[in-house]
Image 1 (cartoon, rainbow, N blue to C red):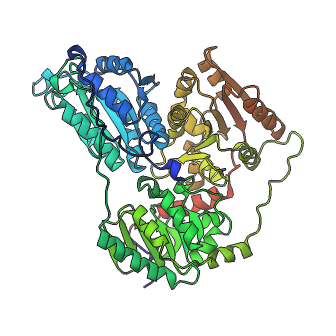
Image 2 (image 1 turned 180 degrees about the vertical axis):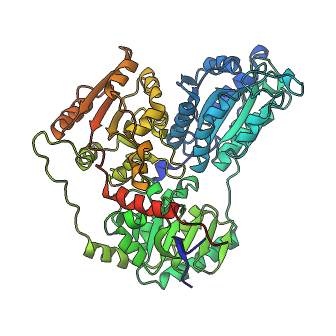
Length: 605
């Protein structure tokens, strides 16, 4: 059978695992000490929610105030362990909670009813696509207004208040509408625990008149969650390991490839154990960059079909067996459905399911258990890596720039590479930064995030805010295109208010370059801004901020030296002027293939 994976023929090291507080688990375990009795006047819904957020690892909540959530915000501010961060708009608050969850393991945002809820919805959808536990809290109508024929402001003018709820039902794994105190405790705890168990966003709407009212169910501090761990079916696990070991041990040149779902499966360590034991060549899919240490002795780069790291696709696609751990095969990751993979050669390992070639499938088998057990059963085989080593030719360097020559993108990223360390993290915006950042070699401990499945332009501004807030000990380096920046630029303001020391490279090439390479038109040209002047205006003398505009390599070198030296404690914004047609070769190839996939004619009826 010649069925292909991700083709038209068919219709982060462990520290990056999604977890809760710094102990690396999704729950805190109940202690033998009875929870503290709360003063009756303080036994409120608002206090309980605030304490619960802190307990699961959220110490920063991103918010936009509105009249329906103001009383709730009072209670969140009153919690000593919680920092309320006001954002410029709800979309960025959601993106910030997304970035925060990627680093801290869980994030939260608070907005107001409908006008705020529908504004944050796009960010929540992105978090859902990326399997991030995000708690979206909405200040809802007064509890007395439910079931009446009243029309409220911030609605579409109908007495039915369910529009917002119905919108959230498709992008969250649990929805709680709290409009009375009797079941508020249960609804809130169920929502938060479900977010942690399912690693997906949840929606909690809280009536605006309820947060400050004492109730007996809140008379003690919340008991820490003790969430039951998921377990593999023991017989299914044994059968899956036996079938996979037999499949791989008879192969001549097998490889293993890590995918993005390793994070939600908490299987990054197990994947590395398998790599160590097997001797196989190791690659990652693009959206799994950062989940596997790139210093591994048999790491061969990113497998992304026609735009893979040099020599990586040749080794993966010529293998006679490949194990993909947590893959997502969409039109972007498959480069317009053009991967040269065959199903009969593949073992596909999802978070709780294993499929071996065209043959058996095994459910209720957890990825991390399967990979660890499989590591014990495989014969060591480094044939694929030896083949890679034989054909590998080291990368060249960009052509040396002439004095004052206009800056090229490949020169820019050559210098960004030199900035990376274990104390840094890279945020790559949707666009050509996907491809340029994918080529960066990450030192041990260097974080890396981008939003490949949802691909919402502008995501990186809010995500940078949230990620940097979650790990203040790292210096975040954000690579953002001018078109994306125009969508969400305002929350550079919030970065300054929070005293963040991020370095933003604003790549100014005059338009939506990624869309130009898929399908060009006048709509891909944008109005040019004076971006450094804009950030200076936002700065307005408050906080630590430094900006620079660079046109050539000499100016870039000087700007980087300043940003990492004299201005290392400032938010540094470096606008990089490049030619509108200066793109990575990978974007040119990827864009043409995605364009071909998008323009397929309708099937005959």
